[in-house]
Length: 427
Ligand code: SPD
Image (cartoon, rainbow, N blue to C red; front, side):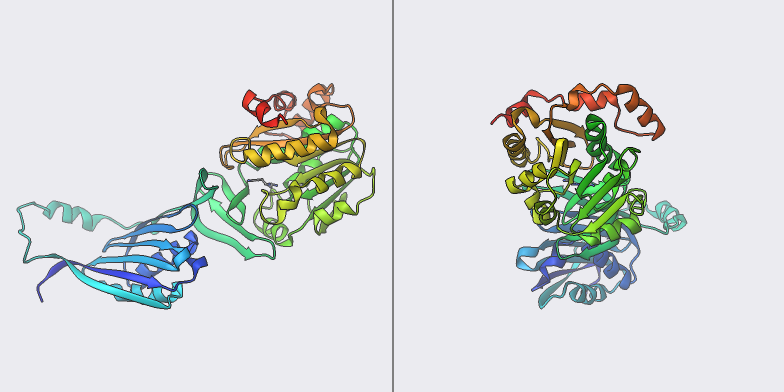
């Protein structure tokens, strides 16, 4: 057989596990593993998850490359194993077949760059060869793996290390702790970013302090959701608060965050905290009437276990559980990403609390799609968050607690809404 520069195996893997075919992290790990198993030197890998599903990626190796495109809906992966030199790519083939759980497969092996058909030119590579032999391979290859939080038309992607610290399918959702390159460790539920080490304070300061300073004398606070612990950490900074009850449906979220996000899950042992792993929707349906000063709904997006946190009955129950003068604040979605959920939630709150008693505060979170996010209020009294008078008290609190997002100006300013948002809020 004539000599060739490279060897190319074109592989069809069929009947693969669809969940694996949609899991960018495990595919990257397996493709890199397949290269290493065959003795290749890995230089770089880049892998992307696509909307609504599918993964594409390439592992660049000193000996050429391994590439993949997956179609989870068909349990199918198209894989290219292109190698030069002595590397035996069939070892990679066998490894991937096992990893993907392929029930069927076919492979076509081709020689690439047949030297009989090529004419060598006088391109002088001797100096480059010397340089190459001086090159020391770094211990770690460069990985380029992306987590994408998306709907069918819009997305936010964060590059992450590819390492997964926690990955558990709870009865409610897939709970993962990953490490993003820019924002540190992050909690994801299903395929949505919930919080990251480096920008969590935007969200947790803004869900807690405006309602507590508007109320001015909250003693009894209920937090529904908030399993990462950031919200109760902020609420418990207020010395006047006597008791915080937190009801989180998913114990796996609490467990993951206690272990891997300890700066966020910092107050779970606080003596004023009554922590319950329970269904917040059922809890509020059975709660005492006129009982809480402030209720904070720190839920995820309206899919999966948080869907009921966007319903009329849930907010009616919250209204009933609030004392007169009480304040409800809820994670309100984005007016640029989830316009429908954003405006429907506000219409529900207007309906229950009254048209003038459902203000919206906007704030910025770099790791949520579009970056523009909201908290929505229900006021069971006449105190409006825009009309606060305790500015000095806020200023000293901000300084004492070294807050990084919230201050008195942001408090008032966050309730100003652009015209397109006003339009979304009109009924
Ligand atoms: N798309 C993100 C919606 C925000 C959900 N809550 C985040 C939890 C932070 N405690």
